[in-house]
Image (cartoon, rainbow, N blue to C red; front, side, top):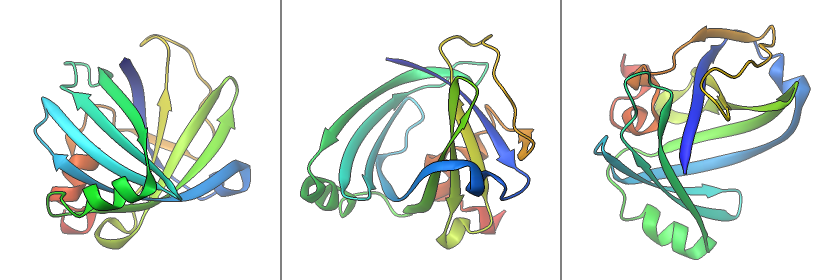
Length: 155
Protein backbone atom coordinates (compact mmCIF):
# COMPACT_ATOMS: atom_id res chain seq x y z
CA UNK A 1 0.00 0.00 0.00
CA UNK A 2 3.03 2.25 -0.35
CA UNK A 3 3.16 4.02 -3.69
CA UNK A 4 6.57 4.92 -5.13
CA UNK A 5 6.14 7.30 -8.04
CA UNK A 6 8.19 9.73 -10.10
CA UNK A 7 6.62 12.55 -12.09
CA UNK A 8 7.88 14.39 -15.19
CA UNK A 9 6.76 17.12 -17.54
CA UNK A 10 6.35 16.03 -21.16
CA UNK A 11 8.17 17.89 -23.92
CA UNK A 12 6.40 16.55 -27.05
CA UNK A 13 3.29 14.64 -28.05
CA UNK A 14 5.32 11.70 -29.46
CA UNK A 15 3.98 9.59 -26.57
CA UNK A 16 0.57 9.50 -28.29
CA UNK A 17 1.93 7.32 -31.11
CA UNK A 18 3.48 4.94 -28.54
CA UNK A 19 0.37 4.62 -26.35
CA UNK A 20 -1.28 1.21 -26.05
CA UNK A 21 -4.42 2.68 -24.48
CA UNK A 22 -6.06 6.00 -23.69
CA UNK A 23 -9.17 7.02 -21.79
CA UNK A 24 -10.81 10.08 -20.22
CA UNK A 25 -10.75 10.75 -16.48
CA UNK A 26 -12.88 13.04 -14.35
CA UNK A 27 -11.89 13.38 -10.74
CA UNK A 28 -12.66 15.38 -7.67
CA UNK A 29 -11.53 15.48 -4.06
CA UNK A 30 -13.63 14.84 -0.98
CA UNK A 31 -10.64 15.96 1.10
CA UNK A 32 -7.44 17.73 0.00
CA UNK A 33 -5.60 17.72 3.34
CA UNK A 34 -2.06 16.54 2.41
CA UNK A 35 -2.10 14.06 5.30
CA UNK A 36 -5.20 12.28 3.98
CA UNK A 37 -6.29 13.14 0.47
CA UNK A 38 -9.50 11.39 -0.63
CA UNK A 39 -10.08 11.26 -4.39
CA UNK A 40 -13.06 10.11 -6.45
CA UNK A 41 -12.35 9.18 -10.04
CA UNK A 42 -14.47 8.22 -13.02
CA UNK A 43 -12.23 6.61 -15.64
CA UNK A 44 -14.44 5.91 -18.65
CA UNK A 45 -17.21 3.90 -16.95
CA UNK A 46 -15.21 2.68 -13.92
CA UNK A 47 -15.38 4.41 -10.55
CA UNK A 48 -12.41 4.47 -8.17
CA UNK A 49 -12.15 5.77 -4.61
CA UNK A 50 -8.57 6.51 -3.48
CA UNK A 51 -7.07 7.55 -0.15
CA UNK A 52 -3.51 8.91 -0.18
CA UNK A 53 -1.34 9.75 2.80
CA UNK A 54 1.33 12.37 3.31
CA UNK A 55 4.24 12.23 0.86
CA UNK A 56 7.66 11.57 2.39
CA UNK A 57 10.45 14.19 2.30
CA UNK A 58 11.80 12.86 -1.02
CA UNK A 59 8.42 13.33 -2.71
CA UNK A 60 8.59 9.71 -3.92
CA UNK A 61 6.64 7.63 -1.42
CA UNK A 62 3.26 7.73 0.23
CA UNK A 63 0.45 5.51 1.44
CA UNK A 64 -2.17 4.75 -1.21
CA UNK A 65 -5.36 2.69 -0.96
CA UNK A 66 -7.75 2.23 -3.87
CA UNK A 67 -11.12 0.55 -4.25
CA UNK A 68 -13.19 0.16 -7.39
CA UNK A 69 -16.73 1.45 -6.95
CA UNK A 70 -19.82 1.49 -9.17
CA UNK A 71 -20.07 4.19 -11.83
CA UNK A 72 -23.24 5.53 -10.18
CA UNK A 73 -21.50 5.73 -6.79
CA UNK A 74 -18.61 7.65 -8.37
CA UNK A 75 -21.00 10.12 -10.00
CA UNK A 76 -22.82 10.67 -6.69
CA UNK A 77 -19.54 11.19 -4.81
CA UNK A 78 -18.19 13.57 -7.48
CA UNK A 79 -21.20 15.80 -6.76
CA UNK A 80 -20.05 16.02 -3.10
CA UNK A 81 -16.44 16.96 -3.88
CA UNK A 82 -14.68 20.18 -3.01
CA UNK A 83 -14.67 22.86 -5.73
CA UNK A 84 -12.24 22.29 -8.60
CA UNK A 85 -12.54 19.19 -10.73
CA UNK A 86 -9.76 17.58 -12.77
CA UNK A 87 -10.41 16.54 -16.38
CA UNK A 88 -7.76 14.77 -18.41
CA UNK A 89 -7.03 12.15 -21.02
CA UNK A 90 -4.66 9.43 -19.83
CA UNK A 91 -2.32 7.58 -22.19
CA UNK A 92 -0.58 4.37 -21.12
CA UNK A 93 2.86 4.06 -22.70
CA UNK A 94 5.21 1.11 -22.25
CA UNK A 95 8.92 1.85 -21.82
CA UNK A 96 11.06 -1.16 -21.00
CA UNK A 97 9.58 -3.00 -18.01
CA UNK A 98 7.41 -0.06 -16.97
CA UNK A 99 4.26 1.76 -18.02
CA UNK A 100 4.15 5.55 -18.04
CA UNK A 101 0.78 7.14 -17.39
CA UNK A 102 0.75 10.37 -19.37
CA UNK A 103 -2.00 12.83 -18.43
CA UNK A 104 -3.03 15.51 -20.93
CA UNK A 105 -5.16 17.94 -18.92
CA UNK A 106 -8.29 19.83 -20.08
CA UNK A 107 -10.27 22.74 -18.69
CA UNK A 108 -8.43 25.11 -16.35
CA UNK A 109 -5.34 22.87 -16.51
CA UNK A 110 -5.25 22.89 -20.34
CA UNK A 111 -1.69 22.91 -21.64
CA UNK A 112 -0.27 20.77 -18.84
CA UNK A 113 1.00 17.30 -19.75
CA UNK A 114 2.55 15.16 -17.00
CA UNK A 115 3.98 11.63 -17.08
CA UNK A 116 4.11 9.40 -14.00
CA UNK A 117 5.89 6.11 -13.49
CA UNK A 118 5.33 3.77 -10.55
CA UNK A 119 8.36 1.93 -9.23
CA UNK A 120 8.93 -0.99 -6.87
CA UNK A 121 11.93 0.68 -5.24
CA UNK A 122 12.94 4.35 -5.03
CA UNK A 123 16.35 3.56 -6.58
CA UNK A 124 14.97 1.39 -9.38
CA UNK A 125 16.35 2.08 -12.86
CA UNK A 126 13.88 2.88 -15.66
CA UNK A 127 13.94 3.95 -19.29
CA UNK A 128 13.43 7.63 -20.08
CA UNK A 129 11.80 8.12 -23.50
CA UNK A 130 12.84 11.11 -25.64
CA UNK A 131 9.50 12.86 -25.00
CA UNK A 132 10.11 12.89 -21.23
CA UNK A 133 11.04 16.31 -19.88
CA UNK A 134 11.98 17.86 -16.54
CA UNK A 135 11.37 15.84 -13.39
CA UNK A 136 8.84 17.45 -11.04
CA UNK A 137 8.61 14.69 -8.40
CA UNK A 138 7.83 16.26 -5.04
CA UNK A 139 6.74 19.63 -6.52
CA UNK A 140 3.29 19.94 -4.94
CA UNK A 141 2.06 22.27 -7.69
CA UNK A 142 1.78 19.19 -9.91
CA UNK A 143 -0.25 17.08 -7.45
CA UNK A 144 -3.78 16.68 -8.78
CA UNK A 145 -5.24 17.82 -5.45
CA UNK A 146 -3.29 21.09 -5.83
CA UNK A 147 -4.22 21.46 -9.51
CA UNK A 148 -7.88 21.26 -8.46
CA UNK A 149 -7.33 24.22 -6.09
CA UNK A 150 -4.83 26.24 -8.12
CA UNK A 151 -5.12 25.29 -11.80
CA UNK A 152 -2.18 25.42 -14.19
CA UNK A 153 -3.70 28.33 -16.14
CA UNK A 154 -3.62 30.47 -12.97
CA UNK A 155 0.12 30.07 -12.36
